Length: 234
Length: 234
DNA sequence: CGAAATCTTGACTGTTTGATAAAACTCTAA
DNA sequence: TTAGAGTTTTATCAAACAGTCAAGATTTCG
Image (tube, rainbow over all chains, first blue to last red; front, side, top):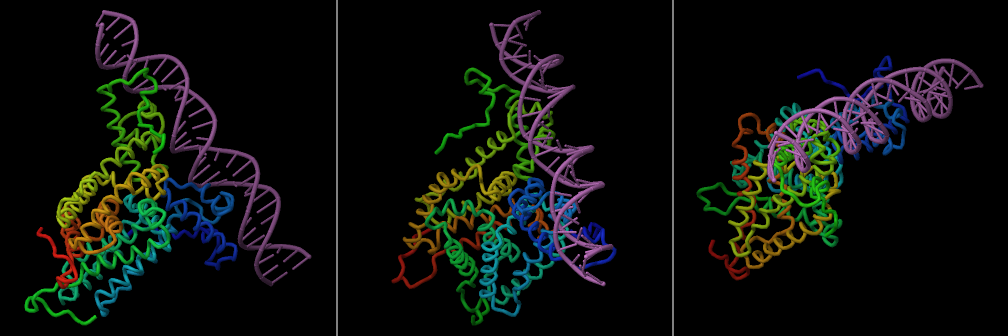
């Protein structure tokens, strides 16, 4: 652990004690973070500029810097908030549930996030492309332990013959990559599908395809009953 | 097609006619493009700086600008070269081959590219994240027609009962995303797999997993012979 | 109301960045 | 060997950039 605990909250510095947020503060910070999400998700940390964000938020640069003292503070506020929501669906996978429905709803949720929060997905992708300099430690601790935990759930299902035996870590990677692809590579997806199929229906088509791929691909094979435990009802 | 055919070759401009490249030219352009690939793939077009690239190439900034007059020229030279190599594996899919082996070798080739050319993969990803401003037209024409062509090959196999019926376009997206994930999200993959499994063996594990996922998932289902054409020998 | 707290702005600073000009140097081929 | 093509460097520029400051405007609340 280290001591770089800047919580994007520079107002604390000038106030003597912790204090409630003003109406204007809430409003402006929201506008700033929204504009910053646009900028950072499209151009990365270095490529985005404060002027650009300020313009997107409809305020002057010094005014923006009144709420977030440094460019980094805005970025870190976004990243911190991002990680929370980004991992929620994975946490939701339930050991007591049935394998295929659990995976199905996980895939669906991740795909919905790609559809509804594409900027967040791109921000995350951008951070990864840069080598995750700001969150590498978090990935190695928080993320790793969460994924390890869920991988063991999947392994349990596989041992019970309720799921085809594959590497559970790589399975999770595959679900991440295929779903997030529809946010991160949206331009490409639209361009390749063309005006007809690249419209709003593309997410439903993707959902259908991904369920076919993962669920059929992972359904336990029909093998002689002697060599493998019976599949439970689903 | 359009007329923006700047082939990153600004030396033509000052020479009266097309001329052969000097030893030094070849050497320096190579060093520049290598350093630029590092910079652009990690920080995107806006985030990368000429100074950074010049330093990576071991030369002064004005010297670099002698070979490529503008930052954009370097970037465009990279992108142009990238698209060629990036689509080669897809073109290689053979209508006359057998479905599963063809897919298997395509997946393997794409995964090898993620392993051997991660910077190229990240450069491409970065361009996508920014909305592909410089190659959108190419995606809509060249890429689309190539993917359409191969999707029809897959559809033919599906109609013949040699491949499970899924959306072929989304199948191609899935292969792209899962394989490129190992280049673009490399930090995350390493962090999650940990020091033990995140080493050099991760690509072989990934290959094993992806083949299990795609090939088992796409193998034609065992259905009554009457309802579906017989599977050809493979 | 009116004073304190909060918010906004214009003007500014030092630095980085993309790009240019011209002089100086090096290589190459006749 | 030497003229000229090709290469490198020094010096420089204007714009873009992150961030500061103090003064003015607005909101909040007793």
